[in-house]
Amino acid sequence: MDSTLACLAAWMPRQRWYAAKGRALHLRYVASWDMPVDEPGVRVRTLLVADEGTLPTAVYQLPLVARATSTVPDALSTHVIGTPARESFLTGYRARAGARVPRVGQLLAALELDKAVYEAAYEARSRPTWIAIPLRAIERIVAAPAL
Image (cartoon, rainbow, N blue to C red):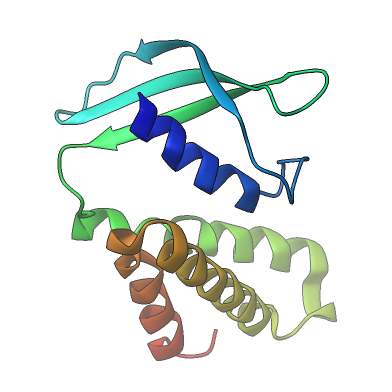
């Protein structure tokens, strides 16, 4: 548990929702429980930790996911950024906007590219073994013909 708390103490100050930036955390384990998961080799645990460096003490509920392997299947990476909802979004948007936005597909591609670049930077810092997901999305977006 000490190594988990040490990892959380390094990770939490980089999170947008963490309010006490700029000071050392004093984390204490409070409780945890496992969630049922059907996927083999995956463990989902909710962890309650108290930051005793704040007054009053702040309690955080953090979901943790542990995988038996550190790689992401190729099939997953094709469905993470962009592909599944793109066509239905464009169909609905064009139906509402009509001719007012003639290049909505290009705008959507630019927004997806922006999101994929952001995700690549995040994964490089937080989960380097998952960086292949946003990099594949970037390759797909750049190689795709204009919509």
